[in-house]
Image (cartoon, rainbow, N blue to C red):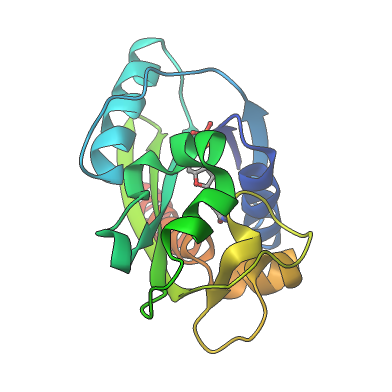
Length: 189
Ligand code: ITT
């Protein structure tokens, strides 16, 4: 089966491809854009974007909205992660945490898809801490400052396969694949 991931982020595309290829799903790419609404949750953003894309006639497509939630900052940057990365950057987030003892954080990913006219919405989450300084060159976005729980290396210091095994996106993609398999089995019954 073929699906189109709609994203401007090549890092997300690489992770989707790496996670879904072993399951026999081919991921095509489109950088079609939707107007991202201001909302309190990733799911609201995903639902709004999915509705806009469906209205334009797109089918068998997937989108991903994600964010880094830093607990000592009340969940900031959260749904504003892309904006925060563009403006204050990783260094800005590190500065906001200077002198703070609690460096815990989590990543969240919400995947929305429209497959054969039906919507699928799934979530994934990964707990961790914010490192004192950036390390590593793998991955993208905030990866160099996020240390997943149980690891001593940042997401930018582990391989894409290892990251997919534990990450918010890896978990959401697995949940998506299970949901998809269930629906396809039902359709063939
Ligand atoms: P889209 O076109 O898919 O929206 P985007 O990069 O704007 O791409 P989001 O709107 O989901 O993505 O914004 C999430 C931000 O959080 C963005 O700056 C990402 O780089 C960052 N981010 C998301 N997932 C990440 C991950 O697995 N590791 C590091 N940073 C991540």
